[in-house]
Amino acid sequence: MSAIKDEKNLEMTSTSVLPAQPGDVEVGGQTVEKHKIALADADEAAAFVAGFHGEIDPKEADRIRRKIDWHILPLMMTLYFVQFTDKTTLGSSSILGIKTDTHLTATEYNWLGTIFYLAYLIFEWPQTLGLQKFPPGKWMACNIFVWSVVLCCHAACTNFAGLFVCRFFLGVCEGSITAGFLIVTSMFYTHIEATRRVGFCPMSAYFLTQEEKIVAIERLRAHSTGIENKHWKREQFIEAITDWKPWAFAIFAAIDNLPNSLTNQSAMIINSFGFTVGQTTLLGMVSGAIEIITIYSSTLIIKKVPNSRGIVGACYFIPNIVSGIMMVSLPWTSKGGLLAAVYLGGLGTPGFVLSLSWCAATNLGHTKKTTANAMLLIGYCVGNLVAPQMWLAQYSPRYYIPWGVILASYTICPLMMLGIAWALRRENNRRDRLTATGEIKVEKFYDENGEEIDSTFLDMTDRKNLAFRYPL
Image (cartoon, rainbow, N blue to C red; front, side):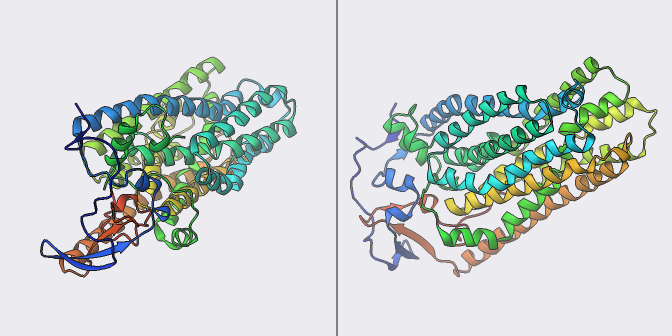
């Protein structure tokens, strides 16, 4: 069955519905404000589907989405698996002799956690520019290759200096991964789909036919923040750094990732409860299982309950707050209770995962979106590079100061998610009122050939596109 109804072929013909001259016209009793825009200034998908007026078969669109899933998701999952294995290796090796073999002090060990994210922070902006200027898949592939070489070099390290240099270059390369995946998911998936699936782009995906590429793009109309635009736009950059949303997500990421230092500390903490090295290693697997279950369950809830990112993310922080209270209040003799508290702290993981796709979905315009993503990941780096310095030797074994900071983080983060959702809902209501009273005109956009361009593919920011409603 053809994916395109009432369309005999895929030839791009110029058959505009309205003349492509700017101005106001009357259409169906409504005043429509028309704009003329050059295809070069729009999203690259606009030029790819220019002249197409067919209708997409929903069943065929679902088939193509599944095809995209089978090609994109295994690559993303494999890469994230290796990346997170790498991130947890330092923590696991802390009880397996790395501190003794390389003569590390407690301060030097903490700096191995900090330098990774300091390098990540320094190179996040260059990595973001590279992801916009070059094909994301190829840019990430180059970084992954260098990353793999650096990772192998760890085996040759015999002291702090060698590990320090290797960790620095790991941070440089890994700065492209999460930012790249955010761009890839926004290229291929709608807002809701991207939330469940956090390169390639549809126009160059080798596994799609020409017809399937068009369907892959068309299914994103009104449900995406655009596909790709390689032109860096200064006005979008300025809008990003003067808009409250990217800053809110960046601050949230910084605070939320203060507890992430537990990645390097949890093995030593669990080991200090009296478990053997082997038992500690096995008990560490529980945290991974908890994260898988919580992330998957949170995305299922969001699929069932639209516009619930803020509420769902906030609710998953409740066990974290309980965890923080237990860690600072339980006696040291209550090993089982303290271990349960460590595990409860992993239930809040969906908050940050949801914020990644939420930030990308609420910032339109390719330059603005990549800038907002970079700001969020810079916040992520700040939280992660500061956090390891909390775990000073004088706080051992209870570490009341670090756990107090973590409890404060667990308390602030859900309030921020609810606050962001409230502010976005308020703006949506304002735009609805302006539309209802006629203060916002219906706008249509045409290219130089007179073909209408859907607002999804205009590379227009969310502030300028008042027809856009923010996902909550």
